[in-house]
Amino acid sequence: MAVQQGLVEVTRETDQGLGTSATTRLRSIYSGSPLLSDLSDAERREWFQTNVLDAVINDGGHTFGQFNTSYSDSPNINDVETGGAGAPASPHVPNPVSPGAGSVNPSDQTAAPENFGTVRSDVPFTGPGSQLDPSVSSEAISAQRLGDLNLGSSS
Image (cartoon, rainbow, N blue to C red; front, side):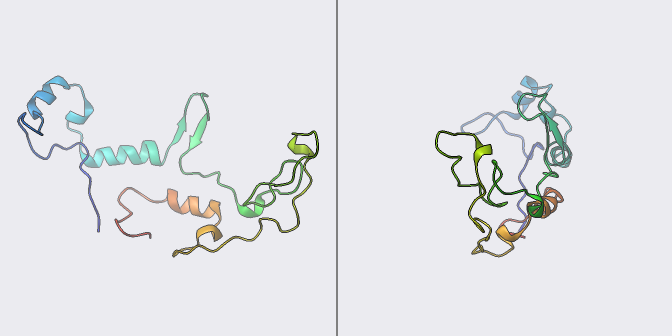
């Protein structure tokens, strides 16, 4: 079942009253707003898809620099380096080993106990869950377009 949310197209004119706005008054006050122009819901969806969901956002170096919203740099589980010296115990969990007495330096850590955090748990729902590699799941998710998902459906 597809549920459509109204975005910018005015579906009915209203007069100011209890629980309603005055459409003509709003148009005169906000005459420069693109929301009250000839912008359509379809144009707004396309803008959002292009500029938010499929974008590389640059915060000008404030925090992250450039951020690709498709998560195209998601790791491949088999490429994650593990071991000591601050590396994770496995691609799924951090290294629980203390760096040693008097040290807070992760490079002093030894490797985690053998097989620590290497067994992924099954999920109680449909789909691969934690068995799916992040590089694969992010590619599938970023290929979706607005309107692809239906209410009540996980696929």
